[in-house]
Length: 145
Image (cartoon, rainbow, N blue to C red; front, side, top):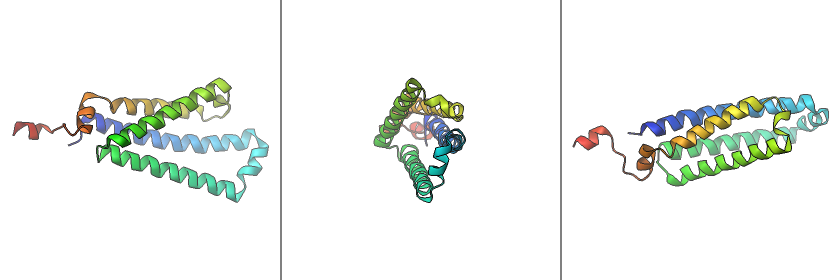
């Protein structure tokens, strides 16, 4: 049986994935509205196809990581999730410092997704989750016997 921290991680991680898709689509719409020259580029079938493939590829990676963390107790997958979180943190900081983060209207959703992501990573390091990744977690029924 999965520990409560892993269940919470799963819930938050799925919410983060959904918000990430919303922020991406909202951001693309914002680019079209704020930069008319980009609208021409974004109307290219190749660019749209590359964006769709990239979005689907990202979703597949996120879902595979979710599976390995939540169902397989993979410590490697847990650290990859942490690495992706660190990269998103650095990207967020860079965008804020450069002033580009707030130019698109999707930044409130992006900030919410980042906060939810931070919460999900926090749950991966709770004592019950750490024991589970080490293979030491047991359900209450297993401890009684």
